[in-house]
Image (cartoon, rainbow, N blue to C red; front, top):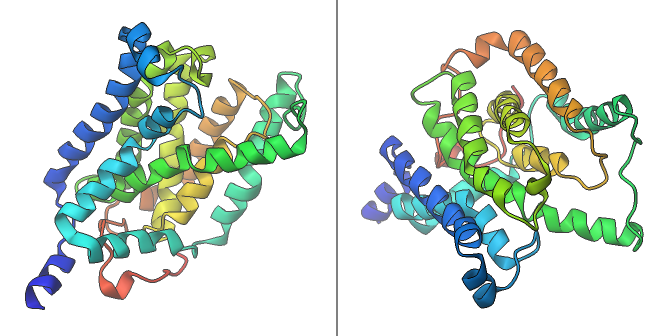
Amino acid sequence: MAIASVRFQCDVPSAALKFFAIGTFAITWSIIGSYILLPDVTVAHFGEISGVHPLYFLATWAPALTGVTLVLAYSGPRGLRAFLSRLLIWRCASVWWVFILLGIPLVFMTGSLVKGGSLLAPLPPEGTGAMLALLGIVLFLGPVEELGWRGVAQPVLQRHMAPFWAGALIGAVWGIWHLPAFFLAGVVFENWSFLPFFIGNVTLAILITPIFNSARGGLLLPVLFHWQLINPFWPDAEPWDTWILVGVAMAIVWWKHEDMFSRDGAVKEVIPRPDRATPGTAQ
């Protein structure tokens, strides 16, 4: 019992961050790279790549898979349960709920109107049902990444640097991690420009940082945040959505500058202690 108790208390050490980076890039880049460098052989064995291909899901889940593996390695099944309990933490300052549920859609709608588009994305020929099905599918794509980026990388980095810099670094790595997809036919990235996307990734990672810390390391809000970003009902607002979000991020950093540039109140635990494994309070 004593050994199990000690093992449960073990958090993911900072040194494990290099394994998180190696595992995340190795899984994603090997899958996407095979379709870029050996397209004929890869397609012959696994079929054409698309946004609903199992290998595309696997490539997208790399941060989560690597993060969960590290949690299991250092803390065991009990530690994993404590880690996953962070998905149930929903309490935080109400302004962040308003921002996620209303602010993000407003950004896309405003950007779309600026470029002469509509308030909502056009429905496919199959109708609303197909759009709702797509909404459900994307919930299990990008949002799952948050188990790695915010689940493991953010708290570990906040042990050593201010939240602003931790968020910016994750955003830069997040952007570079996506780079091979821009050379891959059959997925949405092939029609995008990398530089605005990269700037957007850094901006979004900075934006989610005060929300993450307000929720005391909860993962539910980062998951919802990510889901809203790829919600198929929101219109195409590129590149105006990026520039609007840059402005929003600058305003939030100015507003929360004391928290963003101090490690004192930042979440630093990957595995919440037993007294913190239940939903936290708003900050």
